[in-house]
Image 1 (cartoon, helix red, strand yellow):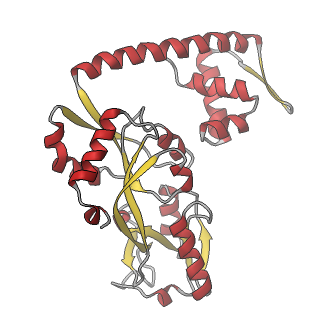
Image 2 (cartoon, one colour; image 1 turned 30 degrees about the vertical axis):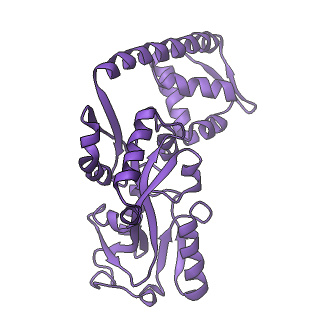
Image 3 (cartoon, helix red, strand yellow; image 1 turned 45 degrees about the vertical axis):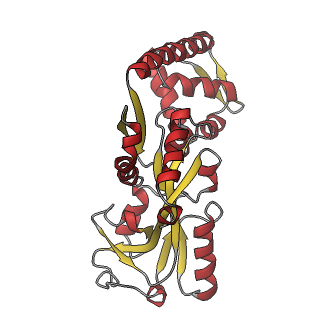
Length: 302
């Protein structure tokens, strides 16, 4: 079928810049450049002239550009027709799952509600937690998968998806094994004074911004270091390689074997729930309505 590297090529051609293509695709400029280089190597053709003014199509690139537009449209129609025939025979809900966004809360719900959806099957679709690519994954709700379950207080995520809260996760901290705090069963906020606390940058999460402001105001001896905008394994690895303390949530306690998660005597928590497309299918709407009808709001609030 259609080579997805052509999408990156077409976006780079349309925007005239690897940087602008990266912004449009929610990737890094390096990732875009690597994908274009891979396509050129695969085809054995030079598609772009690269210069200070940006990108310009070579004659071969211009030819590929015209045909790729046709191929993308033709492939989309062929895939849609095949999916239409498939869904007539089998009804499926696709649920994304990853190390930091596990599908278990959704699966638990499914077994409470599937008597209403006996003709449906549940398929788990795995994906990698990647700070550079997570926004693209969120944008794929409704195409690659129907649902994701995760913590969602992100303004950026909520511009790309809708959110049905299921409950709240407690905020905890993690330190490397052998850290002076690692042996404690429960920490006070004062225990964190003198240490560097890793957390997401300010501006995207109301809950995390509140925590940052509260700690900065009342516990100025806690140093705060910004992580990547969205956690992935590189964030956990940095904590495991330093004496820093990582702010995390209770469902991530066992993500990294080199870290010890410890509860703190504070009241911080963050909502988690079901993420779904901004324009969901009728079947998705029916499932969400069943969640709201059959699962009391007090239970969903945790």
